[in-house]
Length: 117
Image (tube, rainbow, N blue to C red):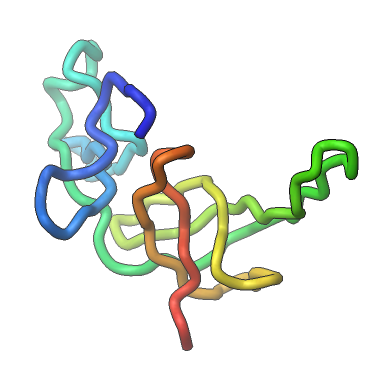
């Protein structure tokens, strides 16, 4: 996993992404604020739970010289509400409203995996 100054995943047996929730407004911020942030004292670190729905996406087609296959990037809305940007995996073509769960990823920190209907 990338070395980050904030808690990306909770330290439990069932990993969940971590976000920060403003105590006064309830607004979520992703990723969770680092302890050194001047705003950290106003926020609680909370898990991003459940599955999310694709809000928007695009498919990237790298240059053939790169040898990389096309991949999808998108915004996924999770309960909270919190909207998170990342790679969409598990289907050839995502769809608006399609359900995804957050999964740990060694290269990117996290990816979204399509949830079977």
